[in-house]
Length: 275
Image 1 (cartoon, rainbow, N blue to C red):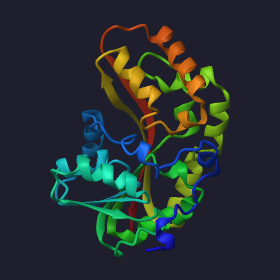
Image 2 (cartoon, rainbow, N blue to C red):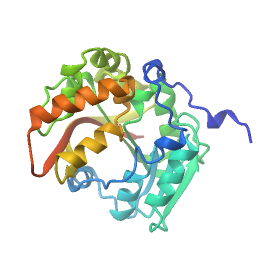
Image 3 (cartoon, rainbow, N blue to C red):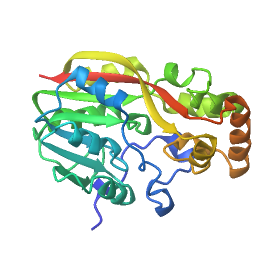
């Protein structure tokens, strides 16, 4: 069935320039295949008690965090994504979670009933959108009064940090500065996010910073394969295969580890309450 809900409303021009195709079969597992780390779960539980909550995970991708909400005790979790390919991966990820439902829908027009959820969660979504106002209006529509919007994304302050053996993302930009210019086009400013939340009627807006352990690798070979596949790293789609191999070779010299590698990313979290 053709319907505008299946199209990515307000997708950011910078993402189009990176040529990432969320509908391509070869990218099915790009946003799956790992678990949400305990550092993320602990942070969520510090902001609210997930037990018994109804959660909408907008832009759920391969379902990593959809599953995490279910495992933390949410009574029902709806994962929404505009890509059927991503949803197929999410279906595999969440196959043991009977309280998870997966829905194909757009971040600005989910198709879900109004006032049907207690928490709207969006991780690594809003930097893909031009329409912050539209997204937060939809989030407010979905939430019951007193419900929470929890948005996790990176600002330029987050992505501009230098690379290190734990903060791997910083190496991308030191090796290829043009990637940082792409980030400037798509990364949300804190003031813009908070303005959009207030416009949508959210109050008691709180901003926090989270260092989340993204993944623990058994060694360099496992990390190398993850990088070369561009798993969960849309920015790397702006590099040719040759450039990516050069980046990985340079990172190997910087990291120089034969043991476990712990990758951590810095995120900004915005939390607002629907009145």
